Amino acid sequence: MRILVRGGTVFTMTDRGILTEADVTVEGGMVRAVGKAPRDWQPDLVVEAAGCAVLPGLINTHTHAAMTLLRGYADDQPLMPWLEEKIWPAEARLDGEDVYWGTLLAAVEMLSSGTTTFADMYFFMEEVGRAVSETGMRAVLCRGLIGTAPHAQEALAEGVDFARRWQGAAGGRIRTMLGPHAPYTCPPEYLRQVAQAARSEGVGVHIHLAETRGELEECRRLHGVTPVALLDQVGLLELPLLAAHCVHLESDDYRLLNRTNVGVAHNPVSNLKLGSGVAPLETLLKQEVRVGLGTDGAASTNSLDLFQELRLAALLAKGMTGEPTAVTALQALELATTGGARALGLEGVIGRISPGYAADLITVDLTAPHLVPVHDPASALAYAATGRDVRTVLVDGRVVVDRGVVRTVDVQRVCREVKQRAARLVAP
Image (cartoon, helix red, strand yellow):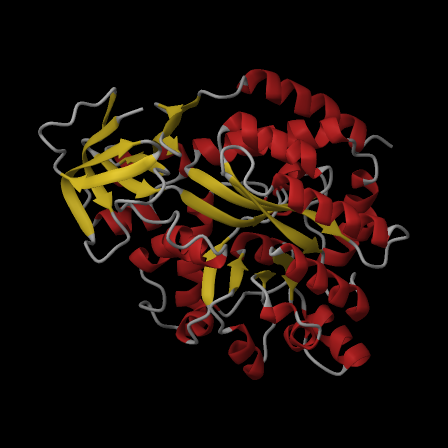
């Protein structure tokens, strides 16, 4: 389908910068041109973007989508009691249909707030893939692996099988990885097995890393090194790696993370809400570590609106360093777009509005009272906009959100299903 996104303020996220009253032409699922539409080019559909910002689709580099089922269930607790006493017992009741409907709800929330790509680690990943296929999103998926669980080897085999069969599914919108949960739930030998399997399959690895002070101290006690150094010892830093959180880092860790194949998923809301701390974002960026933004699951962060994450990321960096320029408005937007693409190993595919890139685009209405006047569109987006200001969303050149309404899913049915299933999961 030929689509013309006409007359918006286009954030190219390239050297061309921000273009005013510019057009984006889309054809065959790709961006064809940015600027004025070619005179001889006739679109099938025109998306009017006057008064709107046009951005690359936002990229959520770490979540557990189906945890929408547990949104608000176990708030105001530290990470380990939250997991061990509330979340894991509820998750033990999950079945595949629960995960399917929970993921559908997450997709609705993400799409309607401007997120077009997400990285997910969970269970029943076939059902996650099914939901991604139906909603039209783009995703990087992996089966979560607990190395200390009774069936850890079977889970690893399932993870490898899923990664093999779903790589390139949904018309190429799905990529796969392997998903060992964390160094504190996956012993070193198990992590070595995961590394070998990922190497054999040619896929990356998604893992929680250095999330809490307790994790850092326990890793030093058991293994004599930091969690980051442990991953280096078992060979995971040699592979494409997506490391979620990285809150508690020591000086040598930055050098280990500064590799073109390693990305960090920064989850400021979840880390604050669970009392885990604040990731050293400014230092990570100064050390040229590839950083994207994530929401984590809705059970810990409650909202999957990536606009709140990018705003908080910038504000925290300023507050923690005492430097108002630590992370600027434009840098925060870059974290949610180009930074996320780099962290997921999708640089050159998504994250920019440029010819040859996938047509994953969003329009954001800049005319609402809380955004007027727009002296600086980057500032308006980073510090005042919310996901509710998103109007149109394209993924792979297909309109999936039109005037704020998700068109690929029966939203009311999804909400009804999730309410019923969530009640069963948390019943006494």
